[in-house]
Length: 476
Image 1 (cartoon, helix red, strand yellow):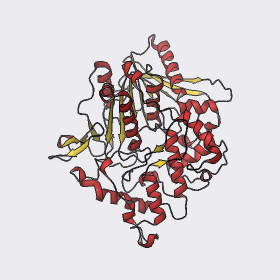
Image 2 (spheres, helix red, strand yellow):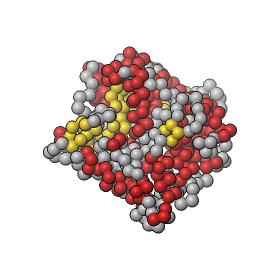
Image 3 (cartoon, rainbow, N blue to C red):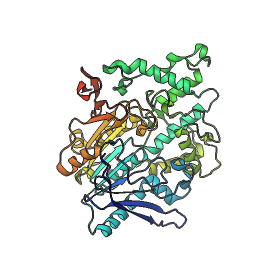
Image 4 (tube, rainbow, N blue to C red):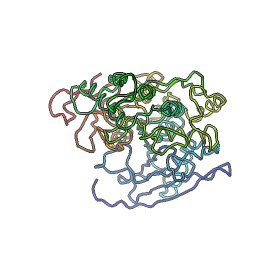
């Protein structure tokens, strides 16, 4: 963006809890001198616990376009009702307190933060915002869907990126992976993960018409890891997988179903495609670089550490509990607690008609190579909305774009570091009634472009410059 200096004031506030033993909700607001009369709330990430930067861009936003604050938005966000320790967004210790748990997991802090911020905006400017928007990715993407579901009149436009929307379901899947990968010899190290990634590329990369290390038709790419089996299933070389490693890969890639009912109604998590991750410098599938264990190594991957904190502070509320001692398939005495948590964490109302009736617009995005939140899960959510609301009615207020080659939040070196000026697109839709038309994403690393295709369509190479979106069509 240009070098224009943005003058703004920051306001910090604390919202006191009902339970005196619960932590405050801490929030921050940036109030620009040249206000555009709009407001933007940012979501968090992981277990939250820190206030998101009020100067940040929206997820997958273009670096060469002004941030919301630079556009004149009042921007704000909160820590969701607890303050993280040294583990940052992987600190789940707040889950010991019921009010803090609901503030985070059920999203109660979102509405409290929004209402307090709008009150302070009115006090500061003498008038409230004309339009209020929300943007977030991962946990923030889940929060974006929560505000559209629970408070359909609270926000005019929402950007939800790579949303961890069915949180309990994903956690149970992560717990299953922890169980499987903690077995002797079952963890596929970095070399084996690279073998997997390269094997998937060899099998699927050219199917979209172009060999460019981007697999555009993610749902059409399949690789049976058993074709990489070492002789007699023993771990004999970095060029093959042992039987225990194959079991781990299958556990990650296939849907995980549990043989019991939970209160949210969720019955499975769809698993991760084997093309997840970035490149050979980054572990694939969020496995990390070492096997899960007790105590949980910090090198065991984000998912294993997330499970560790959930077991200790959400489920058992015992900081010394062994995370490997809870089996998501057979949770035993923990089943009632899992079911209760599902009513808090998985508020999966796909009926967005109240949000649509209020005039709200929703942009939903996910990278097809996401290693932390499966894009298949977002596919499921979108299909639920279509089934509940109807195809024609859904298109009146919602668009879902699956971005080939993009991983979780453009961390590391993704095959395609997706950037799109989604905020401008959302503004035009909300304020002028003009939905996105043939949007284009830019790779922030290389400058090449690709069309953003509405799911289930995907970019198929036709002819011409392989680095130009004009050379692709959206195929089904």
